[in-house]
Image (cartoon, rainbow, N blue to C red):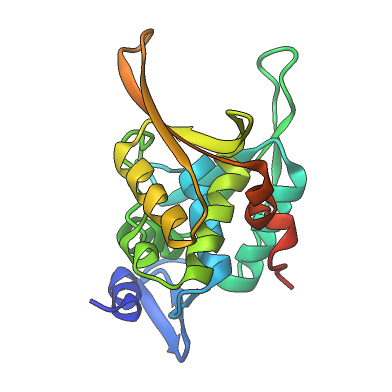
Length: 227
């Protein structure tokens, strides 16, 4: 199935108001705000998907996505992507500190069944706990290198950090680890991979690291800027 058809199918339980290079959708019953859903895969959409996989959550009890970050600049950047790509504005709210000494964090609830369906059905992000079962979506694995890089930027912006004298990330999902390894290889970025058992939880974790000279390529601040 093509990406465009998969997007159309994901919105079938909604009212489609308009269709050109995008869909404009609303709930079939009751009041709701229209949401734009682009029909073409683009860098901003996949950066958003990478960020949600990294630090987002699809609720099980309602069609809501939340993302919580300590980097206010980054969460504002994601808000701009939502404004441009979905024509929806979502509020950023401070999270009350529960542990003394921790950084202030901010969360952005995304109340939109259209975006929820897109993430769950097209980009294969499960609802509820996802850390050990999330993966690189197939439409990103099969995309061009600009799309793959934008997705990696979204992952690194939320999950990445210093690792093994360079940069990288770790994950509880073997499938995500293998998918990310494939993306780095496609982009010809040399990486080291490793895995270990976290004894406290008796659970296997997986890591990727790369030299700091490649980090500039991964930095979202140097990439596209939603307008």
